[in-house]
Length: 123
Image (cartoon, rainbow, N blue to C red; front, side):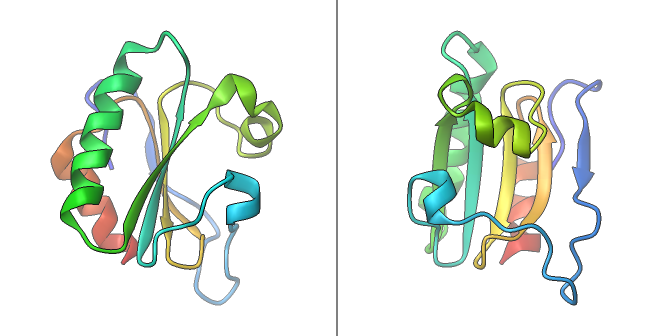
């Protein structure tokens, strides 16, 4: 998934092979159930303008695809999770597969086409 700002970091998550299972997140950590097929986890902050646009993009894509959930997490209220996942700016979006494995990560506001492409990797 790429973001609209060329300086934004966009990457596959390293060490996430099927064999090792990769790092996983679950409902207990996120405070909500994961989607049956995939989940967008968006870390936001209160006065973040790009977070609002990212919320709209992720919600639109999640509504278009059955079994995809969009969870938005207030970064300031969940500092333990932010530190654990090395979230350094908002918005940051994690794309999880059905088992909660992080398959993609993007910082900054993503484009709709990039969100759809990243979703294809997760489902």
